[in-house]
Image 1 (spheres, rainbow, N blue to C red):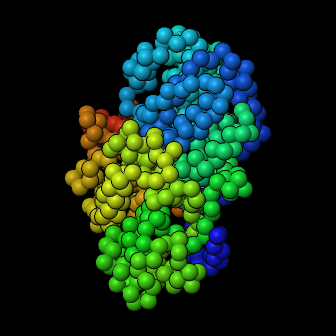
Image 2: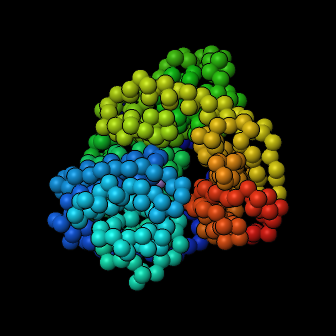
Image 3: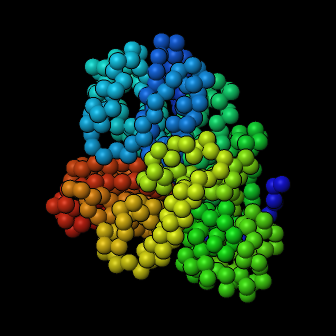
Length: 479
Ligand SMILES: [Mn+2]
């Protein structure tokens, strides 16, 4: 079943993000902390009557919650789940959610793929008699452990030098936790891959460390088929004509979201345009790859029990994060579904067409360029639902000067909401410095809220301060 194709052309010469990174990796300390965090759960699980799972409202967050739910229900603990993208303070949010559960004695609250504001959350739970676990992989501020309440536990791999994208996604961390609780939770490895593929936005062969181990677990357990072939993330389930148009990683500039254009190209290459991506012969994959400057050779993950969009890990995750915007009640069900509901297929197609169209627009969009950053005002052209994704895919596809940081966004309510990105070629990454460092500096100077990873983060700022930020931005460099 598994196709083997040698990767001969590596056209996109990637710089070593992380592989050359100067850093101190404290792997033993991380493992010890994981043992202790799992131990704290083992010690108290018999007392817990109910668990509230609070998870991030993206694919990684949904996958994380699904793994936790599987683990907890195996332990006989019923769960409720809430998905959240941090908007205000934690106090505001928790004050609106927790009262629904305060009648339950010995409630456990799990934060997954969210909640790296450990100091803020620690303060909130001092008064509450609840068990709390925070399993997150976003960059976080130093924590004074002595100030935390007694039944409050957290683990974050970035503290030990791990990269929160390439090495350990949110669902990867939750999966490691669940597998330590019981080896039987290895059954959830495939779920973690829904999160990993969407958080990393990388070729699977570029995964490292714990992310790589999850792929291996899922493969050995025969939960997935790992294919080597045409890499067209976003459209792996499609015909080759549509796949070349709607692939978001890589985004094929020449085709630019137009399937008529890809059909003409395929005709000239004498490749049947209605063939499915997974059915392509090795020689056809090589011919197509040679035709475009983008690297189209890579790995993709199939879930053999699923059909349609849900059959492929990356597309499965993308559908979840889109459904979280449009039909939240559907999003959670998708992990348990084998075939794609019609409404979800429509949502997905609209999304992927708009995204590829917008990536084409990004290339020509007006940009304000300083010595160190590129500002793009997204508000005139794009619906806010797309800001973050266009910024991410512009970045992973190197659609702007990779030596600069991208700040893209516009007004969102009373604040300016910015997606902050850098490519894996951004030179300061070699010293472990990425957009997380810039966001921290900006927060210190202008206030506002924000955080994230080395390659991708978000920042919200008041409009009057944003004007100053734009004038003064270069003074925060070198990072
Ligand atoms: Mn995540």
